[in-house]
Every structure is written in C-alpha cells, then in structure tokens.
Amino acid sequence: MTPPEPPISRLPPAVFVQALRALEPRPAALLNRRLVVGASLEDCASFYGVSEQALSVLLLRAAVSLATKTGTAAREPSGSEEEAAWARMLVAALEREDAPVPAGLVPVVEVCRRLRAVSADVAAGLEAATREDQASPVRQREDWMRRLAVAALLALTAYLYLSRPEEPPRRPRPPPQQQQSPPDAG
Image 1: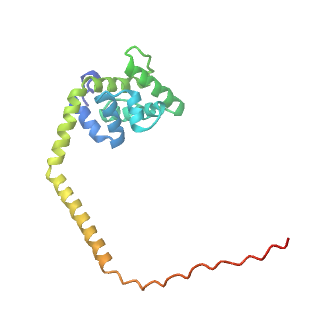
Image 2: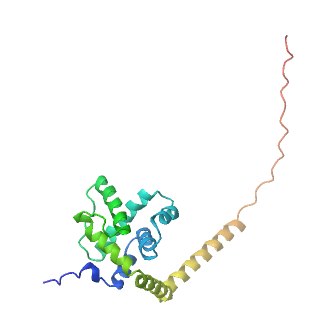
Image 3: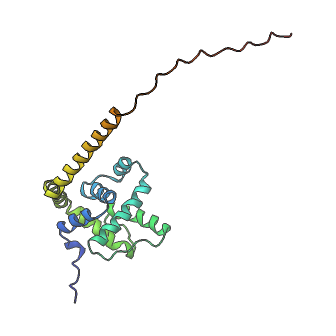
C-alpha cells in the first residue's frame, strides 16, 4: 500500500527545490522570478519580452509541470480555450485569495500559493544547491574539459591560419571605361 500524499499545505521547501531543479530551465526561471522572488506579472512580462497574456499561459504551463513534479495530482488543460481561461484564473488566484477557481485548477493554485509561502526557504535552498553544484568534482571536471576544448579550437584555428597557402598577387583592375554617348539628334 502506498502512503497517502501529504497535503499541499505541508509540502516542505526541499520538495520545491528538488522540483524546480528538475524542471526545464525556462519554466523553472519563470516560477522562480514570479513566485519565489515575487516579481509582478508586468515586470516578468517585460523581462521576458512577451505580453501579460502570453506570460500567464507560460506561467500556467510551468505551474502544472511543477505540480506534477511535486507529486500533486494535477492535469493539464484540455484545449487552448481552457488553457487561456485557466491562465487568467491562475493569475487572479495568485493576486486574490477569494478568486474563483475551477476544480481542475485547484491543485495547481495550491502548489503556487505554497511555493510563494515558503519562498524564502526555497530561495536559500536553490542558492545552496547551486553552490554545491559548482563545487562538485564533476562540475569542475566539466569546466576543465570545456577549457581544453576551447584551447584546442584556438590552437587549430591558429594552425590553419598560419599554414594557409600564400595568395597570388592581385593584378590591379583597369579603370572602368566610360562609354561615349551619341550626340543628341535634336
């Protein structure tokens, strides 16, 4: 028998840190900026260079992905019309606690609200995880391999440039000849 999933209101910050790190970079960055940092919808839209409506749809998609990564039973909208309506309702629900939300969107809204409630701990957890990644031996080895690859490309470029055959001297171009126009007949 599987243990029942904990209520969304009790999800620990570590679950959100793990879920945000498991998401694709753009949705994770959007959720981080909007819900963890607390930037307004207008600020996020101008930062990403999209309209507020487009950003709300991106936010909905990212929030649904986050909800599924946290183990919450959330479903995606069934079509573009439902997606647009849910996006508007999610934005309203994040701005007002008493905003009406359809039953299918409730788990997503609860996950977003919980993420916002534990945002300070999530931010600290993300920062600690980033520092840990940067200090890991695997990351350091990857950095050295990148540096070696760049050095090899520079050396190959220099070799090919220096070993190219000499170009034959160019002959000067003759000046363009002007055509004589016939005298006017009139």
